[in-house]
Amino acid sequence: HKGWIHQCLLYAENKAVYKFFATGPNAVLYNRYRIVSTSFEQQKIDEFRNKETALGDKYRRKKKNLLLQSDKLLKAGKKELYTACLDSLLTINSLVSKLDLEIRHTFISDNKETVYTPYLISQATDIFENYSLYKNALDNLSPDVKRSKYYDDASDRLKAAKAIYNGADVPILTGQDINGRNAEIDYQKSNFTLINFWASYCTPCREETPKLRKLYNT
Image 1 (cartoon, rainbow, N blue to C red):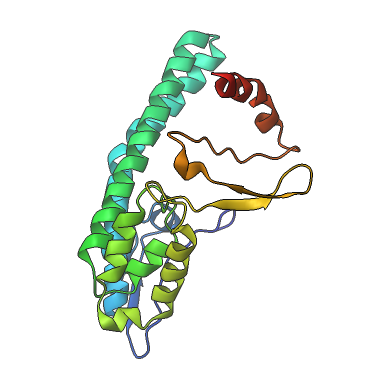
Image 2 (cartoon, rainbow, N blue to C red):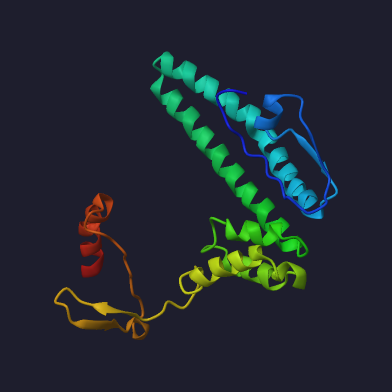
């Protein structure tokens, strides 16, 4: 079908049999295709995909209606109603994202025998917010899964986040001050320390400077 490319996730397992069923391009685009396979890993991938597809189907029509309505309101010059319509759309998108994360977390916690679990962990976008959940899931994987490259990838991802995930004990920061002298920030003796990472080329960072100065003086 010209005009778009859509990814269909397949786990190529030796000697496994795969049968792909789709009624047309839109069936593929909206993940309404079906894969029948003797591969256990492919079955787990499809189990997860089907849950995500069901979630998308639940809210797709409502989102489509809001988009059509917002276009009409914009053309009619009804700015306040148009803004309210977009706010509703953002609310739905936030809800879908939250529910999608819940599906992922449940699947990861419940499936210890599939390499798709560490694969999902290696791709997680909330690794800093939910480090403990992913670490616990990774530690409880089956021995066979722990021997896979997917486990190694997920382990590397968690190791990179180990020192800075939400709730972690932040390591002592060392480096040089603006005069080139070695410096070590012993903030552990303080009741409260704000660590702000910024760059001089970052406009939003520099716009925050007056607020940070006021906070510092406070």
